[in-house]
Amino acid sequence: MPYVVRRTLIPDLVLDAHGARSGVGVTIEDGRILEVGPVTEGERLPGAALASGFVNDHSHAFQRGLRGAVEQIEPSHPRDDFWTWREQMYALAEDLSPNSIRETSRRCYEEMLCAGYTSVTEFHYVHHRPDGTTYKDPNALAKAVVLASEDAGIRLLLLPVAYARGGLPRFRDQTVRSFLARVDALREWSEGRPLVRVGVAAHSVRAVPREWLEEIGKYAHDLPLHIHADEQPREIEECMAEHGMRPVELLAQTGFLGPDSTLIHATHANAWELDLLFEHDASVCACPTTEGNLGDGFLPAEEILERGIPLSVGSDSHVRIDPFEELREIETNARRLSGRRNVLLAEGETSPTPYLLRAGWGSMGLKSGDPADLIELDLSHPSLADVEAENLPSALVFGAGSGVVSGTWVAGKRVSGQQR
Ligand SMILES: [Zn+2]
Image 1 (cartoon, rainbow, N blue to C red):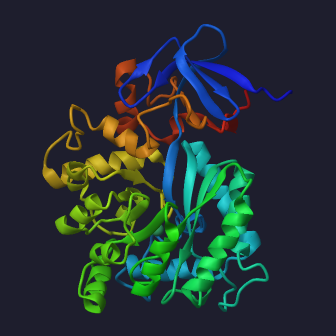
Image 2 (spheres, protein in one colour):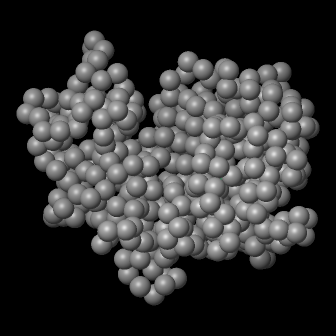
Image 3 (tube, rainbow, N blue to C red):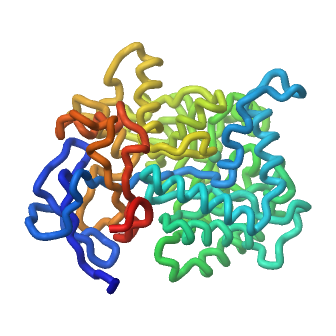
């Protein structure tokens, strides 16, 4: 089949955060959306709705290997929690090789595409041989992850993660300078790979000292810059003991926070820390299915919304890969905490759905100029049968799962579902 440079898709409905329209086509050219508007000529997608693909803003792809294996008590740990789970995650990380990380990551990314994620932010911290010595190519494992994303066809933001202390030897770089040299090399290597971008990250204030945070914050400039923070109370206690301040205060002081910074979790962030995030235009990424599975706690979602702090979601440990479930959990947890319904209302809204879908998509819907990263929704799926078009966005968030996704397009190419 010749390469089609421009094509117009005409589904039964085109969905955005507020509703669904019929008689609308999506015209794609060279991997981007040229136009979304009324059309009569094009390729029909009967029984389908088109919507934006979801952005999975926090992933450790290899942890998909723990699914189902960590849902029972180990006799050596009669009390199971985040820290005992972490031991099992370390055992899995210890065994990875360049080949196995590529294979496990590819399968994880394929599952994401099936579930409606078209883009993933990989928080990559397994860097070296198990004994801590570097591979012949010091970025061998990071490159294996990039190749996995290309095998699957998903868009990737790769974040090489700085790790100075704790964890396994293979997570750690000797100096911040040698870490940043690896990031430089990776950025150069990834140039010309159309679906790949490289940013930078620090694992946490546990794993990285103050001087490293300062250096990495300086290095990042306008690169995406991520860090885990305020996931567990113990991490905050340790930060108080070492630095005399809470994690987000330390990040603000070290120049780590800015418009391109994203704090992963923020589960236990207090009001002052959330104010600091707002003042620095930083974002929060919530991972509700993982945070629930690990017993982390509840996202302070109302406080985040009130301050206008941008929010995204991630499937993190991949206990579950389903963007609808992540979004639903955010609102459902806010209801449990407040004893109310329809809690997360953005200004002028009467439903939490637009706010939640914006967190999942990073936009309010398909628009010209954006990458052609789309999902097809099966309108005949039992979860969506008999739902009025105007209620479709809320039915997806509150009453559906990833099984309603019948196809996924990245950069205008169908990478999951039946070939059209
Ligand atoms: Zn994480």
